[in-house]
Image (cartoon, rainbow, N blue to C red; front, top):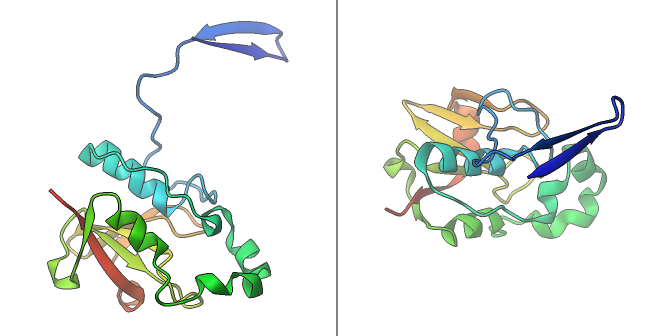
Length: 162
C-alpha cells in the first residue's frame, strides 16, 4: 500500500501500486538519458512482447545527454575505441549470442556506432521486413526503415538464445 499526500488539496490517498510495471508505448517516447533510452526500450520490448526479463544496463555514458558527451568529449576517449564493447558484452552476458547480419530475424538486436564514436553505443530492434524499432538520443522513439544510413553504422548483431 502507498500513501500519497497532495500538498495543494491537503488530502491523503491510499492506493496499491499496479502488479505489473508501467511500460509506456514503444513509439513516441521522449528521450531521457538513462531512463527512457534505447536500452530501456529494448528491456521493455523484451519483457512485454517476449516475456524475457533483462537487467538494467548500467554504464556511465548511458546517463549523459549528447550535449554532455560533446562537452566532455576529450575526457571520454577511452570509450571511443572500436574494440570497446560494453553493449555487446551486456547482451552476451544476458542470454544473447552473436550472429551474422545474414542470420538477422525479427526481435534480434542490431548494435550500431555513431559517426563520432567508434564503439557500438546504440541498439535497434529488428522488426522484420527491413523495419527497426529504436530510440535515438534526443528524439522520440520510432519505427522506421532499416535504411542504408543505419546499415552502414551497424557493427554487431545478436539474438536471444532459445
